Image (cartoon, rainbow over all chains, first blue to last red; front, top):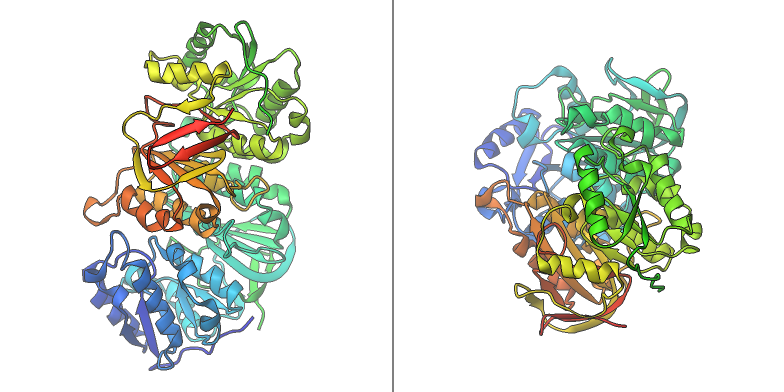
Length: 304
Length: 304
């Protein structure tokens, strides 16, 4: 795996959107937030609301072009996805992954962007960064935990022990070493059966989600189980299931019960409550990097 | 492909549930509806509300046992899934498909039951029947179109030309011959990446869904496209997208636009508006049987 060169104060970063349309009033605050980190944003067409296509930031061809151009342009040192939503999966067959692999640069985002992280990690052997995004978190006042992590991710310091806060729980005992992979559960599942299917063999699989009905969390975890993704991985990190309430509280399984029935029988070292994804404060994670999870001491350490 | 022996007046049929819990007050009306077709229902434990587990009709082991027992019992001539909902996918790794293949019998249901149809068709080479279900449609007064189709499916007369009503539209011209497969879009997509992944090569793929957000219809069709399922099939039949309203009408793609962008580029003979699935009146379909679709004349004929 290749770790792209880090950003530095004054670096030019592409601001683009592979997914849903960016609300017009969020663009300027996003630019200000990028500049506040000492970075120079270069705005790509998919950031402008005028270019939206249905729920997308722009049509598939334009969103794919923005990504391809940003990787190819030698004057761009890194790529920030300005938001998620839905749509990155539409671009996978349109992108020239071989060409992208020839221009490694740090790439940032999460949620719908999970589709691109999987492809960058697997097709380009490139480490990429699961981080909050300018138009969804950066533009707001946020906490030191989140900001500290984001800064480490942006400037290449996301190695060594990663503080997971004090709400992590051990679900299955043990220690595992492997490449970090995963992200948003819905997007990880959307990769199955495609040429960009997540490969969890020997890896540490991170999963979280937002706004899904409980039975859908069950269905998605069941599909991953049926596909052997828990059996094949080395260890499992579970985040929060944000805004995933049961429809009928009196006759439901909670996410905890679902995990006990579907995930834990694989017997892999597993922790839950990892603060990463659709809740604040949030960690950042270097996807594609090798890390060691100790489920008993509830620690995660990224290897140098 | 093997077509199991048909049912006949007085045949004993297993009534069971592979999916969600059956409301207590629906069981007796369901039994009455089965008897009204001249069939003798045998009620399996998964039909009793007292056995429910969370949102499931019973725990995975019991639901799997009911299915396995019903196929194995020589005194049972057919199997009716009493309802859908969610949960059939949980059972796929628990069932002994080789044993089921040794006891072919007609099997009926739709929606969540799609997961079982795919496995029966592909693992057991057995034709099975996409039909309404006792506790969701049969117990109500329904229309002659639906009843006529259901009767043909139950008693082995679902061959020859199938009337698709007068709302079918040609989306892509051409004629195709192949095995009928598919059903509920969500469940077809849930099969991807698993040992029970739908194989659409040279087949006629039917898809419909209910209660999904527009962007999820987009995401699921995109996953099927990315997995090559449209490129590989011979023809496509699209049903209704029932209760799938856009979240933000002013910036959405309609199902029609999504289909134009994601499904039609495969260039396969395609019709839309097939009255089958989560809307009434509904056809029944023999999944696993060979049929001919003529997208221009909007006709479907099941080969003998």
